[in-house]
Image (spheres, rainbow, N blue to C red):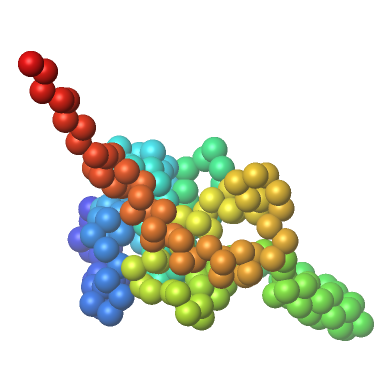
Length: 212
């Protein structure tokens, strides 16, 4: 935060405390620090694009996306995802008050009762949504026998890939049971990631035969 008077040290304390327990990673810390630096007023939204953060931090856009999702999962910040537009971050250390119109003052009691029933039905339906949010996805992944903390970034990337593909697999087919699909694929995440990074390194060296 550029204005030291608006700085909330609790956010940094929370971040480093989480890092000491979970090792959230240098890139995630860099992205969070950058967001704090760009914040003029912690009570207001911080508008930043993935491209801007990637360019100024010297990171890939995918790394920035993974980092901001991890920060959201850790409860350090929240943001609105709107494809094609910059992110609108809110620091969770200083949550913005939500202003709700007090329409109940002009509504009769019978309608209030109906409103409560409708809201209850909506909440029940949303809790049993076909596809998870990031927290539900990660909570389930942590129950699997092949889970380990080193897979967190790869799991977040897998969630992003499926969400952006409207929950379809690489063949374009709908993922009907995401829990089962994740359970079958979790033990291949680390292997596929390693193979991508080492495919060129492990190429055999071919020596030409000596000619007389």
